[in-house]
Image (cartoon, rainbow, N blue to C red):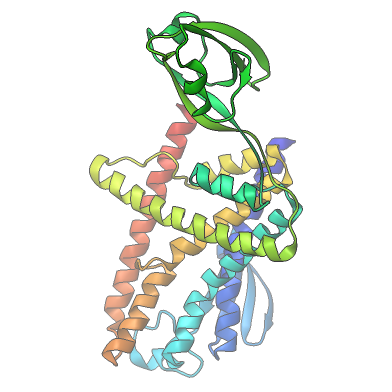
Length: 371
């Protein structure tokens, strides 16, 4: 049952993300006076024409997820077609810009809306990159935070290792004195030959144990780091939730840009797709995991993938919305039309590259799935 639900959730996720993107283009084009010749549900080949409205035919296609819009004149081969009434190239440049960013805009709107809902409900933790950010958020009441001390590593051959202190356990106290931050520990060990560590270990950190640890020059041979013993989020009002949604949008968008940069850098130097980059198979795995964890986890995945789709599409790369935007801006700067054959060829090559990249990422998805 979970597998079937995950498959349906996966197709629903892709369909919503792509359709909301195309709907943004559709609305922007309609408002700008550009004829939308077709709005397709799914991808060709066409299965059925559903209806026609306002000069647009709405179609159902055989590949059952996503969708597309076909604008009049967007792939015009000559100047007459490009400038025909109702065509994409016939409207002012600022309207073409609005049409091209319409899809990205709607993906951002979807993500911010879902993030606002999530932060209002109180189940989502904002993204943090440093402990200081978490502590500041706790002071502001954005999260509930209780810090502890994690024994991240135990030095091989050190005194803690010899008595069996396990790595990845929580240090609760030293000689009966509670510790809450790593800097508490040196003062409690100063001048002593041995101390008693009380730790919590096990898969859920519920198993308690004590170890008498000899000290060598006041040190036990452990690496200590701060650790959130409790991390949760209260419900927030709509205004604060919206602020958090915008903050999360910025943080995750920047992470997406860095991830894309890391992808190309790793490909250039190693020829491999790095960990953390997911294709279709990887997204399907993430969907399966989120469905198992619950509806709110799935909803957050939809929001984050919507952000990723928005950031990816606005990049100035051929075949993407951002790449087509470059040609529009170039026309504005040069004050003359861009050579159509050059533009079409550039976008076609860009599309082939993106498809090849997607296939490569998917190949690594499959390799990691079975490794």
